[in-house]
Length: 570
Image: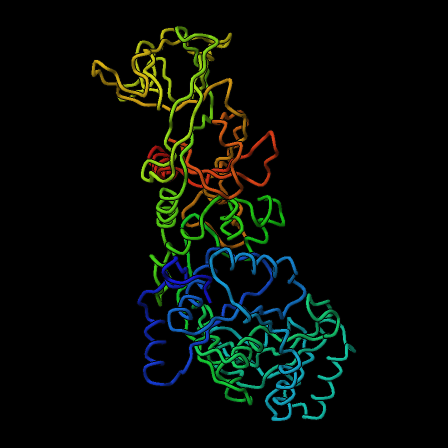
């Protein structure tokens, strides 16, 4: 259940909406087919959760809260070769961060290993399961194709006693990995390839995060999934569309076993976003091969990566609510996600000034020893956020891009002889441009008008640009990381060649940024808006005297515009 009530911003209640899944749940309750709604979120702990999982989390926990039920968190931990405690811990942490709590309803498929094993023996006794000695390659060939039926295994007609003996010896660890499997005896000619004698158990001599070395065989995902739902009394088993063809198999197991309840599976469209790959296999490869720094790299679509980048959980929940729940797969524009992020951060992030690519400014008519403090608002739309003092002195830093020696027609910022406003401070005018031996502009010599303190001229004259700045003597040095999409194409490949679509400019590191000194007290993951730059947050790589800030998102979607320009130019 969610962590707080609706009045205080219950995340599950905020997900309340109308969609075909909720309509089904409501109809079941109204007709008395269901007394209490029970849903579940069943991740396999073989990687970190990504934003696609967030859709399932919000839906399952949201429905349970909305209809007065509860949602289980269940780890489908049936493959110890790929599962680690790190992933289990990360999943629990991410679900809580997203705003949901399962309370006492934490389960694992491994809780049911004995029961599942007993059901497998029941199928053998009923002549509905057999031990197969074929190799994986032979089994794959004999299963047929999507257009041609399969062929019966030469071991399909083994007797019950022999199958039981072999299965128990598999359990005892007598055979090596891959030597034998237990298969259901259904229909090798079925048009649904999932019903062509699917594997129920395989030999896997690998330690399990929870059961250690107690088991030498492990149930398949398909065999464990539906029965786990039945054990837990799940009323609405919600999956993504790729499991639609598996539903007849789940129903076959439920119909042929003495299960305590009969859950029904419903399928919804999975989440697909432009410039993003949500394949766990691809994400694992990105981490393993060093294309990113880890599962929580801010370029990753994992919840851990989004959190480190400074994306608030409220924005993810808002995005999920906006895109809704559909029956057909589609691709969501990344701009929709960014809209939700900006909407939340605009309301919550305090404003600060930061110069990412500094250009020195010397105000020649400002006294050398003088320093004054100016008032700056913390949030223009929230008076309760108060104000802060910023230090102004003779030497400042402005952005390099805020100066152009020979200005273009629509460039209204600083150029020789032009007057501009410094945010919260004075009007200044550039009088001289200082260059180094290579002709690079390294300093601007300016004058200021003391009568314009606060940013307005007594005589009413206007300027066309207001630029941000920091005091050279009082600002702090920082590293700033600017992130762009990890993939350069809006429809990146999720196959073997996905690395060809990686964006070589997905990160830009600026080592010489200067920030106003109040940012020395910034907290990790606490959002802040660098005025005119975007939203940022302090990264965990920070050290006491060398803070590192990551850009969560720009104030506008400049990436898409730049890509469109490049495409047009090409």
